[in-house]
Picture 1 (cartoon, rainbow, N blue to C red):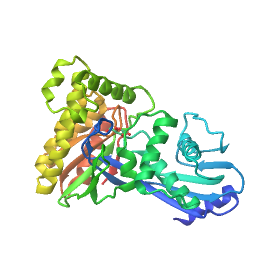
Picture 2 (cartoon, rainbow, N blue to C red):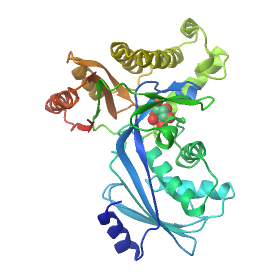
Picture 3 (cartoon, protein in one colour):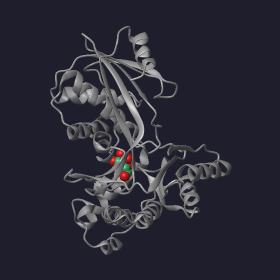
Picture 4 (spheres, rainbow, N blue to C red):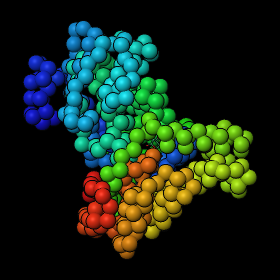
Length: 366
Ligand code: GLA
């Protein structure tokens, strides 16, 4: 924790923080829109993180401050028991205190400062990272008997029940459990997970397109409903349970295409885990390319800017594969390439993007 950070808390609240917590953002290597269909995902933590500093109060007031979340940085306060969604970033904090109270945890007011270097709306789970960070701080402050999976599940309940984004469990599990040297191979139905070493003979690159998305608006929730509708046509509880992909051709559009993406994507995650264990980066790359095509053509969650970044990446022979990562409708791409080329290639790809679109691309990794 830097001195500058501690000084800011003290200057604003007039006393010092006593609890410190943090959690990373995530990038998903493969397995997109599978988590709310009972399927498999393979995210890993990114170096960008959210930090929280907190001090308990003796009353029921919650005061929140951030200089880098929200348009120009801002503050907000409310009384416990008075939580309401205001469609602003601090809903995530209010949603947590709402949920803790709903579940009968005895909490009182607190002063909280949060800061992050995870860009918002970039498909890198800034919100899951914020939720897990604040829950970690409150777990410590109130000595709550919650494990890391509980924190992930509670973060998801806040998104679903308070913020109104009907997201799956991948991002919260990644923020709570993932680290950056391994990929978190997660079965989202059983919540069983295994950490898989990311081979060290590749570079990963992550580029933010600068086209922002929000999962509380239309597109994401619509895809989720389309998957539910596909399930009812196919007579299964979750798309994970469909054995024969050919059945999807009989259920009409767009449900058939949506289901085909999910079913094939689940299979790709399993193949990707196998490819990593065999050290076959060509195969992993090929699966990422297929995943992108399926998200673009079947699931229809890509946008031209993201397609441009993926194609610009694949133009380089050192790149094994690249794809849209996260929920889509904007956000970031993730790619893998031969070791030692990541930085140079990411710069070339970002420069080309900027010269041909009106957006600024930012390189998050390497
Ligand atoms: C968002 C959601 C996740 C997941 C991805 C798509 O990141 O928060 O639950 O559905 O989109 O894979």
